[in-house]
Length: 198
Image 1 (tube, rainbow, N blue to C red):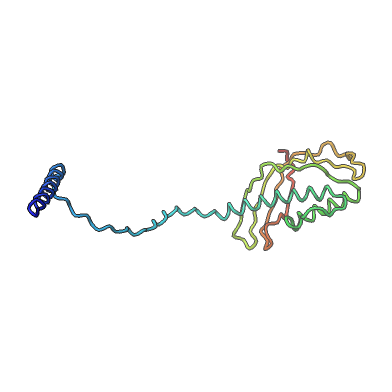
Image 2 (image 1 turned 180 degrees about the vertical axis):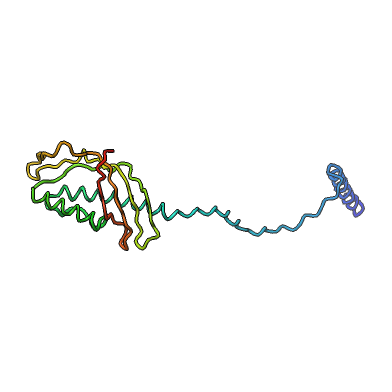
């Protein structure tokens, strides 16, 4: 009984060895390289690529852009003032000062006394900064444009009937403005028609 049991055990062992030999025979003859212990790679955040630095804006170009924006706003507020028979509309002092402001205030006061208003739109065509002096104590920009007042009608404030105006007056003309940078911001200080068609 003991001998038979040993034989059975021997057969199992022999069969297991034979199976192991066959399995090894089907694999590569090269010795298996030992596997390195599994490690977790440290997580690194890649540094962002340096972006090319933006070229700083030219101060003169910035001044020109700001002055032109102020000039366009000045005309929007001027339209409001001329359209109001009480001569109070528009935030003109935010964009105009000195001679330019006085000129609009005097013109609109004269219109108020005559009971007239100007309705419609003024088109500032091709406003171009022809010079910029930003190194002065009060920087300034000179702007040339083509002012089109053909859609701006002078009317009686009550009846809204057109007022007769000189036929020879220019409806599109060159105008030159001087805009200065004050502590409060850019201000149109002069706005002078040049007496030329455009």
